[in-house]
Amino acid sequence: MIDVDGLTDRFTQWLAGPNFRNPYSVATIRLYGVTVRRFLEFADFDGVVDIHEVSIHIVRKYVTSGQNGTIAPKNTQTVRSSSLVLFFDYLESNEENFGNPAREFVDDQKRKNGGRGGRSASRLKTVLEWDEIDSLRFEAGRLETIAGIRDAALIGLILDTGLRASEVCGLTMADGDGYLAGRLKVIGKGDKERLVRFEPHHAPRMQSWLRTRRRLTTRDDSLFVTDQGNGLTIAMLYMIVSRLLGRAGIHKAQQGPHLLRHTAASMWLASGVELKQVQENLGHSNIGTTSRYLHLL
Image (cartoon, rainbow, N blue to C red; front, side, top):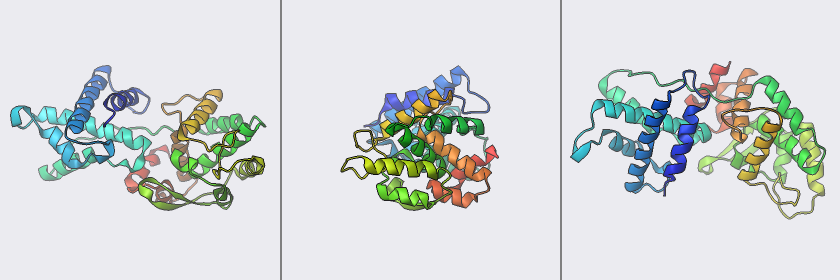
């Protein structure tokens, strides 16, 4: 069953955040929120169990459907399609391989009409500035406790590799050596394996953690574990990153590990890594998703 309330609330909060060059008005955010809520209810009624199942067919059906079997007015279709394009942009900002069936629908309509249509809103990726990266590194490496040594290696690994939260939590002890070698094989979304190539800038922190990790008594083979030896969950990882960002005085629209993933991508491009390699490292199926980071240069 689709989480209608949760998805709608998170979407409107995202619209109200500092993600756009030209912020949306309160009235527009309310309109888009209501439209997305109705779409989610429509999809749920149509038998869609998970939001990932939404296809261009469902989008087209919702956008064009009017009352009593008629075709919806053009202005209604415009509001619906604009709302859904932004909604799936929001989902992509957290899960890049999600895809945007609403944008596919809009592009299809443009081709049929023989025109380019209007321009979509310009969304800004949330990333850390250089001084903020330094502050976060300092804060993460400040404590010499087991958790402190772990967190320093953890933050460094995500900044170096750009891995998703689920991928970080899935790393094993053997992957610690892979990190030090600058190559990690990970299983990403859709059970697709990819090779992430990078410079292990935080190798000393990882080496320190591996020494500490090997002294812990646990049967769990996870690379990152709690003080009690249990593997980190995604929720724990989010809490760790959010806490460190707060201690470093960093406040962004995103406060979890995905912020560090975006930052890793921007740092790669800034240091001259080819766009194609960044795409492969992030596991993006479409290079257009990766190219959105280029505005940061």
